[in-house]
Length: 95
Image (cartoon, rainbow, N blue to C red; front, side, top):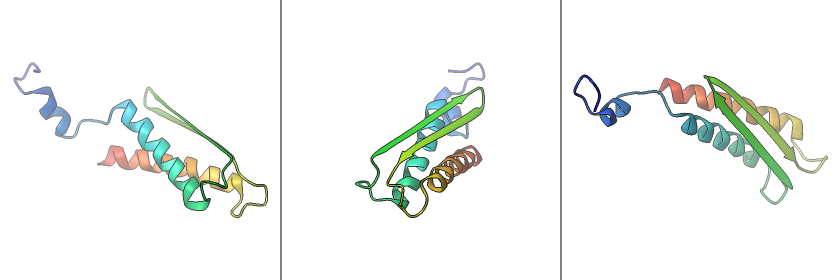
């Protein structure tokens, strides 16, 4: 219970900022979603999505190992995944 007599769970439900864990999870899921939108899971030999959110700063790193001749380009897909992760977090804070 907070000092104003309201229940903290009511405050959380009334539009409180998302938790750091929720931000990280949202960004990671968005990044992975982009990768698997472009490639079949069996095509991707390694995928590492690293997300940190500390003091309001989001850092997303995507390492993608897919065949060199994959279409679209691996680097372009990794970059799109990073950008989409950031957009997903922006939307999370706007909600």
